[in-house]
Length: 487
Image 1 (cartoon, helix red, strand yellow):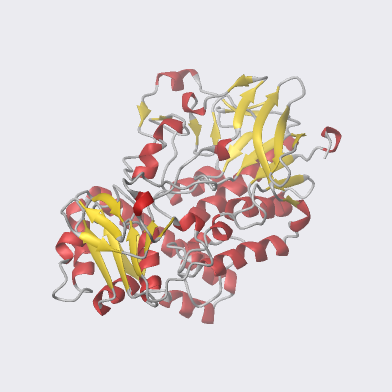
Image 2: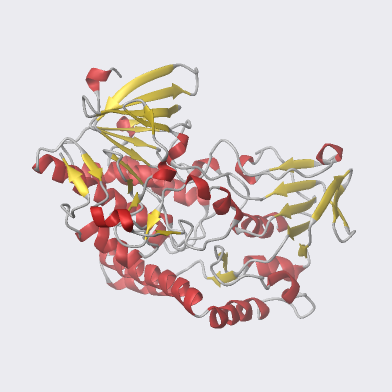
């Protein structure tokens, strides 16, 4: 594509949020031309990348799904293949295939003030060739972690181990684990998804964790959804269930932050009653931190607890000392034998898909700018991004931000504006900074905290983790809010 054939909008990423943005542009901005650039060879983002056994969403599909595409199946917590099919079905429904280009990674974006355009440098991942295109508006939906590498801690003696060491992000499809002894290192959502699935075929599976995580058991099927979809039109039933689930997520989070002792007892009682009497649940399932200092893990239909109760799966809470030929040596002196060690040790977070950002060839450090509603950035024109919640479904926010993108574009057309830039007002320059991690303490988040833009003490310079607040901010707010500068 030459500079003369520029699209109005370039969307970076063809995953859950990128497809949401494309669908909404087709719906709400039909006169706008757009292009979706995807660095990988297929659409789907996370749901095409991760292929480990049991991969599933830990958010229900009524909130992970799109507000404009009701989820009507009986199951609410579903496998990764179902999520992938849903995303691609939406893309087909809104005829996005012709707007997508694959193996195209945006490496640099330079705003040229003289022509009011982004000049994008694009790498062809198949050939390594570089190309430049321009666009009027850039919307980044690249997700929050590096697709090319996961976080793998260096463990002494790994070269001595005679088995396989794998990371879930790059699960080898040819890996045979039937009757194998497996150690899954980690205690997050990935580990808790892997363990019950591997336990169906493995000889023994051990979840090896440094410290416990809060766990909440949920049913795969939503009883209210079953009832409502029988008596109401699909869209009405979907919106009610979506609101109910989003409100429940918000309530659990807020109760956890305000009344941590009460919620701690609630979570722990749920675990205690589901595990066999001779299992040391206090050692392995009582965290040292308050609820929602780290992300809560969902266990659908007690599958993790059933794997433990069967005796095939176990939990060990300890530190790793080193690898040995036949497994791992722990700090306590215990030797754990293994044929396969799975490092479910987390993600490597990034911001804006690792795009090198500049304005008139001057590099932009987003950590020195301020977030505008967690959607755009101070002093950076015609740029937005889709970011999920730390305490709720990623999809529910992606649906709202895609509408907000369209509202901005339509306002620019109505006012004959070529440029939209968030600017701090005089009073905003005196506001206090707040913690961009919102007290959220998982390792992958803390390791990337220096990349985040600054957050202020008042709106709109905050990334509020609140669905109801964001509904007002994205769907019903005034465009001319005194902060967005239209020229």
